[in-house]
Image 1: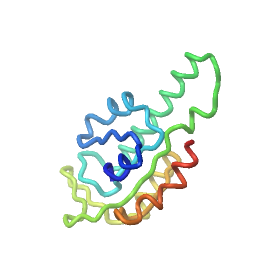
Image 2: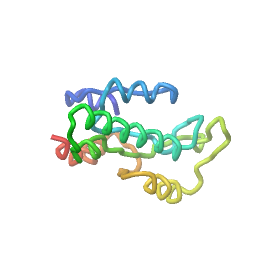
Image 3: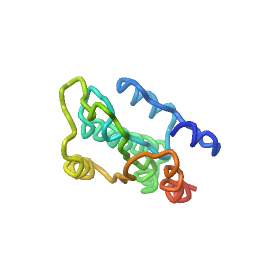
Image 4: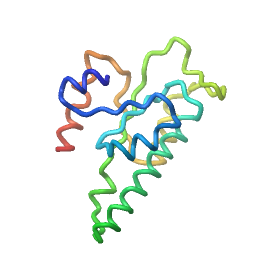
Length: 138
């Protein structure tokens, strides 16, 4: 995924360790945030989504305070895109949580914030799925 985006001259900041998520968000200041819904994590994906939206809201407040402007654009700046990957281990994380009901997990994540689910990651269809999102960011 990262390679495909870089080939299109899109800056990418992958996060492998959960503990690096907030630092990477602050450094990269992303327009799109991709989260693997069934990745191996220490925390449930709903908790990670919650952290991402808390960061987004705090970032928007900080920038609006600096600019002394209540710009609503900043509240929508970072779009959260979720996808599923093919895992042989059925996405079991060290905490012992297994994603059994994808619809339930997506529902919980959508309650936290505005996410977009693009389905199963496939190298041959990935870019066509996100191209409309990239155009919306320009």
